[in-house]
Length: 32
Image 1 (tube, helix red, strand yellow):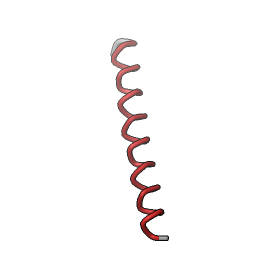
Image 2 (spheres, rainbow, N blue to C red; image 1 turned 120 degrees about the horizontal axis):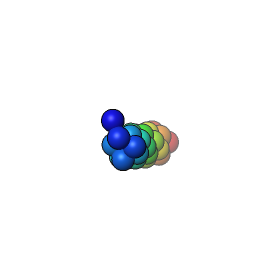
Image 3 (cartoon, rainbow, N blue to C red; image 1 turned 30 degrees about the vertical axis):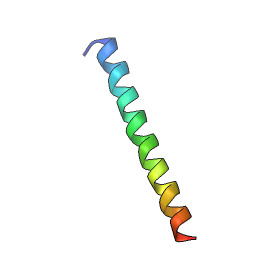
Image 4 (cartoon, rainbow, N blue to C red; image 1 turned 60 degrees about the vertical axis):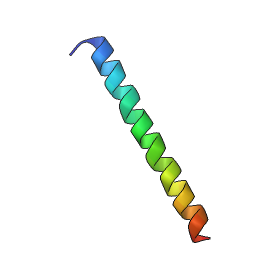
């Protein structure tokens, strides 16, 4: 793997994690 591929993979993983955090936050708001 090149450094660029590693960086891109990390950005994608961060994006997926952020999306999951937002979904959990929305679910928490809906449960209130």
